[in-house]
Image 1 (tube, rainbow, N blue to C red):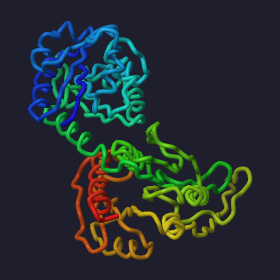
Image 2: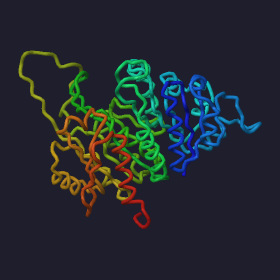
Image 3: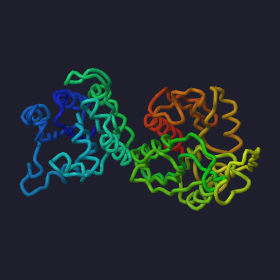
Image 4: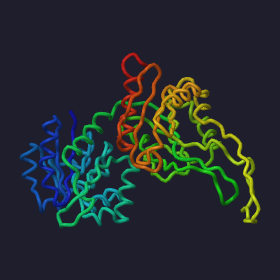
Amino acid sequence: MAKVILGVTGSVACYRAADLAREMMREGHEVRVLLTRSAAKFVTSALFEALTGQPCLVDAFEEPERGRMAHIDWARWADLVLVAPATAHAVNALAQGRGEDMLTTLALAAECPLIVAPAMNPSMWSHETTRESMTALQSRAAWVVEPGEGEVACGEEGQGKLASIPEILAAVRTVLGVRRLWQGRRVLLTSGPTEEPWDDVRRLTNRSSGRMGSALARAALWMGAEVTVIAGPQRAPLPAQARVVRVTTAQEMLEAGLSLVPEADVVFGVAAVADYRPAERVEGKIRRSGEELNLRLVPNPDVIAALRQAAPHAKVVAFAAEPDDGLEAARQKMIRKGVDALAVNNVGDSTIGFESASNRLTLLLPDADPMDSGFASKAACSVWMLERLAEAWFSAGSD
């Protein structure tokens, strides 16, 4: 099984870390614990050493093996770093790369996946600094187990409670279970919207936030892939480990894709590419005149179909945003574009898809029944889809 570093920070919820450590050991994992100095006010090193049979460290200068730098040795030993509970202070320190103690110093040195399970007052969770830090951690491919809603230790109500032990364990299983499925694969992915200029002020675009593309890029990195993202002007942050090429228009996305696709083993067309663009771009700004104004549109290139033709060696996956649950149109699109798989999300459901953190995908493969991800976060949907594709394409004898 896996080698897990459990980082425990100074939240009242840190007493639950003892149960978390024990449950991970019951699942066969080897667990080492790091306490922050504030956590050591609530729980002791002796508790975790008794539970795990391993040293429990607090100070950055502690060395279980004399002359060996523990923050480097343990970082190289670990398959996973899990911080639970993570206080607002810990979240900000991790995001800003502040090596203040053994935990945050080790996190700087670790190259394995990071899971963060925050626990704090609801106002601290919603504070702009905390939100910025969470975004920064997610952009570096950290997996976040969001806190639950309810009454927190201070008696206030809101989002801030440490997630349940089963929820945290599920995240551990997910991250550990998928970390090698795409090892060595080169992934090229398009993400976000495109923008088509009308004049120097106005552009035609769509509601894509880029969250699905970001989640898929992050999941592919977790699974060991080398990832390149061609990103339109999206709001969602992209993982720092990915190579990112920024574009604006559909034509720019196509040109970038054609230059990069010879290097790719798998191509994902996640971007919501504008189907049409203004026939003419006006210099400056079109002024209000009170007169009727007609805008003539011409078709944009079909980016994913063009990449399919340019890369017969690669597997190609298209995405389709459909307004209902009917799959026939999606199957026809799959045939028309010549892709190897197609992921459908129902944009008629306002709780998923565009601008939402959640989704529900239907994955279509040739000669196979449709597969349903169920309603889940876009990160979980991405992991689910990459698992299904790995089963179909990378299992013994399928290459």
